[in-house]
Every structure is written in structure tokens, then in C-alpha cells.
Length: 427
Image (cartoon, rainbow, N blue to C red; front, top):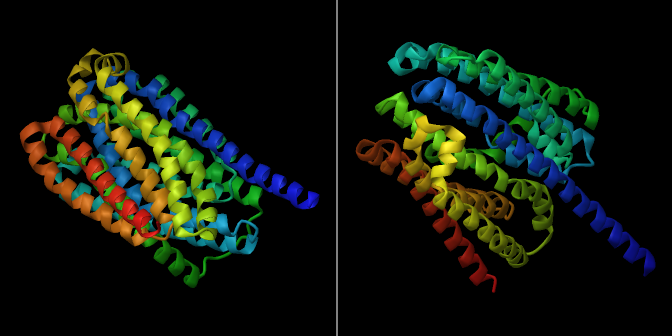
């Protein structure tokens, strides 16, 4: 009896200890993602002005779409598989080799697509150099195996790597970006930071986890593609309405309006990065827990987590709605006063976006409803695109902000309704 109690205590300490460690590691990682832009974005906004800031934002969004393809949903599917096979070094090595191969292969395809866009479309041709300089971000991101470290529940190492790379990028921004004419080098420096992070984390992964150097098997590659496909479709659909706004604004309006909208969006996304560490830290733990328990039990856990999460996110949203003016003035400067309405409109994106991640990725994906989640996100994406064109046409950057809010709300309603239905079925 005493041995059993002792083993239980040891088990709980081990599991909850890892969650706490990963939570703090992810908190630092997300804080880094927020704090460094908190330093660089105000500086860049003041030095570059709205138009050049808009060009950099436009190029970054184009590159982020390529990064969605190279990620291909592995951030969740591979994390889940590795968390289940933590003790099987051979299996982890096979998964790692297959995922990295696919990511690098897709990176090559993305490079070809970028060149075609530059050749055949004026908007891309006019900004060709800033796009080419930015492409290093795609390669660097493909090499960063966050999914491996997260699945192995060793997030502190990837946190250190990201901290170093972000610090290098931030320091270089202040050294080399001194006037509007230097806007081209913002994406080049960002690419350099990504490449440093990619190479360092790749080396650490092999040494830390003692991975075997194996050539990816066709069967494993096929399996990884099948497993990650629903997640890829979902994340791609999510990013249609989360990043398409900057792209549509850039294609159909002007870069100054892109600058106003994208600066407000960065403020909102920066705050969202503070809200996500808990969900990210819980993902591998929830994967294992949900695999063992009944659906009814899992839904109760999700509801309990969701109720606390909702209150905290709602409070943050209200604060951003009320204090949008001082936030814009302090963070972006007087040149971006026009961004205040955008911040106010998108303030509740913090709440709905955070809940959608918890209910959708952490909840439904871990409960085996990947395809259902994919359908909900696809519906949201279609609604978003329909809304985006007419809202941008009539209301420009404010229309893009409204489209973002509507999309997050629609997805929240779809996810909540389905989970309530599951709760009712399971009593």
C-alpha cells in the first residue's frame, strides 16, 4: 500500500513537474515572441513610417503562408505521436527524419512558387528583393523542430535557442536599420535570426535525444502526411482569415493602410502570445490523458479548463478595448493614431482566438475530432473570404479588422455548439 502511494506521488510529481517546466519554458518563449517585437516594432514604426512598415508586413505575410505549407500541421500531429512514443528512440528517429524531409522538400517547392509570383505579378515584382530576403525565414523555420521538443516535453532547450536568435535579430535591427531606405534589410535580418535558430536547434535535437541518423522511409513519410493533413487544412484555413487581411489590403489598397492595420494586428497578436503558453504546455499532457480516458471525462476536463481560460481572456479583451488609444500612442507612436479603431475592433479577437485554440486544437484534435475541426475551420475560412472583400472595399483597414473579429466569433460558435452537443450526448 505504501509502495503504491509512493509510486503515485512520484508519478504525479513527474507529470505535473514536466507540465510546470514546459509551461514556464513556453511562457518564456512566448514572452520572447512578445517582448522583442515590443522593442523592435515601436522602433521600426517610427523609423520606417506607415508605408515602408506596410511593405515589410506584406512581405512577412506572404512568407508566413509558405511557412504554413512547410509546417503542414506537423506542429500538432508529430507532437502527438512523439509524446506517445517518447521512450522509443527508433520510432522518434523515424518520425523526425520523415517530418524534416517533407518540410525541406516543401521549402524547395515554395521557393519556385515565390519566383513565379515575382515574375508574373506586378505587386510581387515591385517588392521582389524584400520577398527574396525574407525567404530565409521559411528554411530556418523548417529546421526548427519545436514539435520534437514539445513532444519530448523538453521545451527549455528550444526556448534558449529562440531567445538567442531573437536577441541577435533585435540587436542587428538597431545597428543596421537607421532610416526608411533600410526597410529592405528588416526581412534579411529576420531570415538570419531564423536560420541561426534552425541550425542550432537541429544540432541540439540530435545530441540531446540521441536520435539515429536514418534515411526517411516512404511508408513513414506517407503516414506523417496522412496524419497531419487534417491539421494542415485546419491551420491553413485559420490563416486564410488571420493573415489574408494583410495580403488583400496590400493587393487592393495601398501599403500605408497595410501599415495601419498590420501594426494594430501585431499589438493584438503580441497579447495573444501571452495567453497561449498554458495551452501549448498542456497539449502533450492532454494527448496522453485523453487517449486513456472516456470521452465524457475528457469533455469535463475541457469545460473546467475553458471556464478559467474564458474569464482571463475576456478581461484582457476589455482592457484593450478601453485603453486602445494609450496602447497605440505608446507602442506605435503618433504616426499610427489611425490604428486605434483597428485595435478596438480586434480587441475581442484575443478572447475568441484563445478559446478557439483551446477548444479546437487542445480539445477536439486530442479527442480524435480532427476532421470535424477541419470542417469548422474551412467553413470559417469561406465566410471570412466572402466578408473580407466587401468589408475591405467599403471600410479599408477597419473592414479587415472587422473581418478578423467576425471570423473568430463564427469559429467560436461552431466549436462551442459541437462541444455542448458532445457533453449532452455523454451526460
